[in-house]
Image (cartoon, rainbow over all chains, first blue to last red; front, side):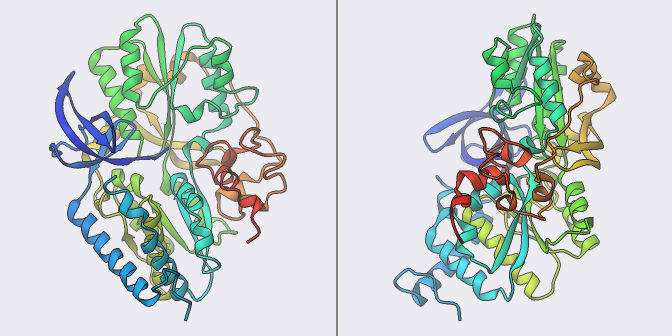
Length: 89
Length: 365
């Protein structure tokens, strides 16, 4: 129910006085209301829930989180080169 | 897809699971609030990956599940009225009321429409001025801004044939009920990332202070959840109780201000009954008196519709984290998604339905 997924804002337009965007989710695109993310611009990724963008994905934070997690993954792979989870010590 | 695939990376998941097992000195009891998170945990087998390093219990965060039986009965009564078009999210249609569900009412000729967004319901009201369009507005804080905007849009368009059947609930009062319960055993919470995207982190910080319980705001992908669990385990092992945000790519500390303003304009807070749990003080959103013209309960006089929940269901204990779905003697036999006895089996995001779908009742752990 609280499913919300990130998509890329392709085109922004005004419709009936509401700021909407055509948002691409992989191969699918949908119209989403952008009133809650007035600073969103074309090319941004927004998190969309029931047709409303509720946040702009923070690129820097996303990259920082992922880099941190990935380094953990690389480290684990080095400890267990066969890909198995390292044994508990 | 960007921002999804990388958070499903099996290699990182394995590393995080190993780190959780390494750090955990006992099976900490952790609860995810949101049904979407429950679903991810079961779908990716995260509970099995972590073994007995943590004990995951599942919270009441499935709005479909906690919508009271009498509210479902009210929606059904509305859908049976010849002048009404009842508009709903798809997952409400098969939720059983006392006698039937909305799917059956639709099959019998009731005008029931499924939409993706409340905006679609407003458009239906515009397109069919002779129909009374009622939108079944259920949800948590994540969905409330969209419903508020639908009302504001209908007001702006001067629509006289659009209303909401509101069944909105708030998460923090439910967590408070759970933590005050004498049988509570939850030691740390994963807070719902999309709720916090809207409301921010303040209220969860209050809960941390009030109950000295660690809370980590978590996302919805397997890596997000594993990282949130790791952060909770580290806090618990270090005897810390803090609010931390794992889902930083979406959640800002103050939340989404324009969304909060829309909700504050249209809704007011009052007591609300939860299916399976009962009434919780200050846990519901209701339309403000100046938006009464959009309130289906006032327009259609539904107050005399009451209902009793089946007594043999243990959903209250499941929703409060005291028991797991598999502890129930009816689970998977007398209670299935096709014939649910109670709240957590009615929606795919309910804990019982998630256990059933991912066949936890057939696996010996």
